[in-house]
Length: 327
Length: 246
Image (cartoon, one colour):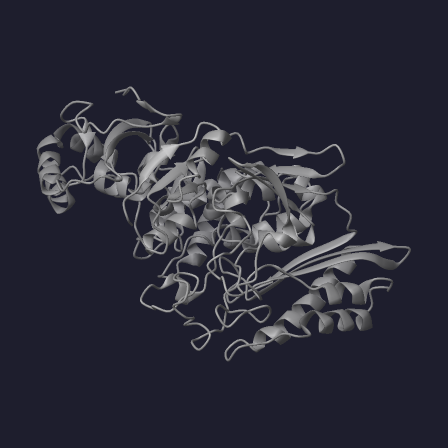
């Protein structure tokens, strides 16, 4: 790991002031950043430790939603009584991620910024990675790309977003609250993460000098939810495919639905065509079949990951079955 | 032992004076010579080793400093105060030194093991404020003011921790390398179960505790600790005993 200076922020204003320096990064849980620094993929000259800032509250909002501080640990949020009872989709997704130790460390803000687990991004022995070194090429596109994207990839990058939490937050229509020395703004979740396009070095639309201060959830509205994660081993592994499904059933028919997929694209991937296939229908096998087919229409697999298309279709179908059974 | 902190701008900063606590009080790394000293002194026995090292470390530490005297403008070592197993230590560490390395290479508590050093195996698991974490992905400097418990701090003077005893009785290990991490993790499982924390295999999240602790639950809850020898069956049996007796 390259040497760096370390300071502790005493306030949010301290932190955003520190971020005006382009060689400074925030240290929260550190579970991804320190790993990247050990691998010489990130080498900030200074870390500003934000762990002691008062951004660790989980607070119901006046409209029945939930405000989550950026420093709430993954394990604390997953096990928060209010989240377990009112947002079980979020609890399930967070409990499916990483290990108990890592969940005790990792924060909500850090999880939003978790970088891809593409092996070529992590292994600096490969010179070609546009995400690490813009313009250097993509070793994964013609390499071993079993874990890579089947939606939204570009010639420059085929990496996927590894987070479970992000998939649930997309399905829940979360809003990300950010601050910088220039002011505060909110970013709707669907606009937070980016597709790789010609700038795969940028994972998100967060500006370099902005600090995530929290996430806000609207009031829960689904009558049935499911987070289904499929991976190479039963625990402590990233998703090959995951699905966050939420349906609202009224008078026997679905009148609102969200289907988001993880492990398939550079950002959590919303399957809007699949959602449309559900609206107005009763949950039955033919509707589930139509929705799950719609979810993978337009997929463009690579040499080694064609299995993900069928896996995604079946995972959407199973998630909808389970979500419907709960309703 | 308290060191006055300098204020630089609006941040907390730290003094870089390596001798601010006086000779023999600040621990520095000395690699193999430090280990050799411990072995020759016959003191490699948990907390005792650490305290002997703390009082006898000055000459070794001075050698290490001399060998490592290249000037650096970024990331200088500073004195960091750590509370480990209810003892206070002052260590001279660069910001990039992990808690794992501070424990093993600076304080001399080698019970905590370095496996992958990348947060993938759990061998380095310790408890910070009672919560299990990977010490390989934790900076020592960020741990000031937080009580740290390692495997050396679990037993009391007269008896092993019930989890340690259960690992022995149920063959919860073979080579033993992952065991300190497994045991620290298992101790945390006991408190998490007491708190009613759910896991991903918990059927009903809305239900109030107690959680029905099946073997599936125990395997999931211990999945952050990899055992290359495959002693998992014994580990699950040890957990079950510790839960029943705890």
